[in-house]
Length: 246
Image: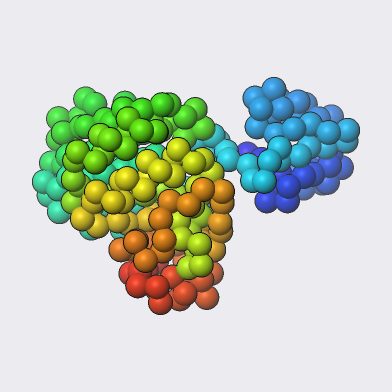
């Protein structure tokens, strides 16, 4: 939704500004803001809205259609890295969900995931051996996180792990919004032979609250052609193989 995108990027917005941006009436904007506020996706103010924190984390259903062509291209490049019969770790996220779909269509594959939406879509697929790790459910990302998840991951090894992140930069590494999610993602990376970050251009050069791992711990970054070239060069200089898909 464009309102959420705008408020997340700017930190705040007023009704007049949003009305001009969207080409709709101020009454329509107020109605949409009221609906989003009721869903606790932003904070209403007199005449506008605030992000309600340092950075808004959009729930998965609101992110699913954002930059879909780029994410599909990234997912295709990611799936191409997986040999038949591999054991694959998948964290939650819209791009990793697309990777899961492609791998299931191709099969055979073993998938280890903490994302309940990915698990639900794969559980009946005969070409997939599915392992779902336990934990505390996060409604924003549909992921199971926390000590239970980390212990389960410590007892298993994946050939390749695909991480969805909220930010990756040469200076600050991979980051996400939630501390528990960061620790669980870190466990995916720690117990995998190869760590691949799948991130569209909006995540490149961005830093959010909780650190997952240093840039040097990432083997491959797959992104799209709109990613800033200077930041990609810096990430590459840190020892990461950078693939631009599109």
